[in-house]
Every structure is written in C-alpha cells, then in structure tokens.
Length: 181
Image (cartoon, one colour):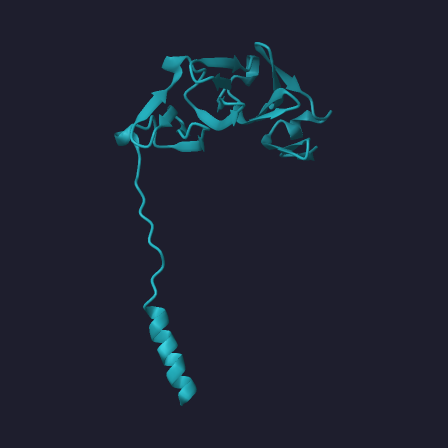
C-alpha cells in the first residue's frame, strides 16, 4: 500500500511537469523571401542569415530581407547550396556558382550540356575551390574558368556528387557510385 501511494504521488507530480514550449515565426513571400521553396541556408561570420530558394537568394538581418536574383547578375535564380569560405559567400546555382565578397557577385558558369546541372556543395581544399554537382561531377575554380575533375573511368556513376567534406586534411567526395578520398 505504501508503494502504491508513492507511485500515485510520483505520477501526479510527473503529470504536472510540462515540456518546454517553442514559438516559431513563419517567413514566406509575404515577408520578403523570393520564393517559398527553400533549399538551403547558412549564417555568415557577420551574423546574417542567407536563404537559398528556387526564386533567388535572400539576406536576412533578423528583421528585413534583401533579395538577389538573376536581375543582380546571377546565372540562375535556383539556389542549391550556400557556403562561407574565407569570409566570402559561395552560392551553388543551377548552371554554375557565384562568390559574394560583401560588395559584388562573381559568376562561374558551366558550359555546353552542363548548363542545367546543380551545384550542390562548395568547399576549399588545398587552396582550391572545389564544386560538387548533381549530374555533372566534380569541378574546381581556376581563375575565371570552372574545370571538370575526373574521378573514375566509369564517370557516369560519379557525376552525381551528393556532398563534399574536408576532414583531417582529406577531401571526401560522396557520390552515387561510392565515396572517394
């Protein structure tokens, strides 16, 4: 009986405890996003939140949005990845990549039949900018050009790069055909 009483007392006390409640604020086109379909976001070293959508790029200061699109010189409005490297924002687009140096955007476009591939990730590895694409393989930025990197003789399995990670001084390439280091 004593055990049953303690159990009931514990149960009543437990029911009275509430989980922490979170409040969320919703942002959409009405609040200034260029599109409601968000693909990626990142916070830069200055504390701004950058949001990549299918309608362009948005910079959020906690109150207002500033938007960037093909009207600002982007190759495409379809943003697929955002990475800050050495204080610059690298934007993965459909058809290429762009770098924002806090003043201007500079674009590197894929050529020929690669104009519609998606730049999924951008990293710095051994002082080079490496770009992962979904459908076109792996590239590196060389001056004003973007150059393809061959991973294997069976390239079709490795054109679908899902992500890049730099760890312990090595570049890991995650593809449809496996992982490369």
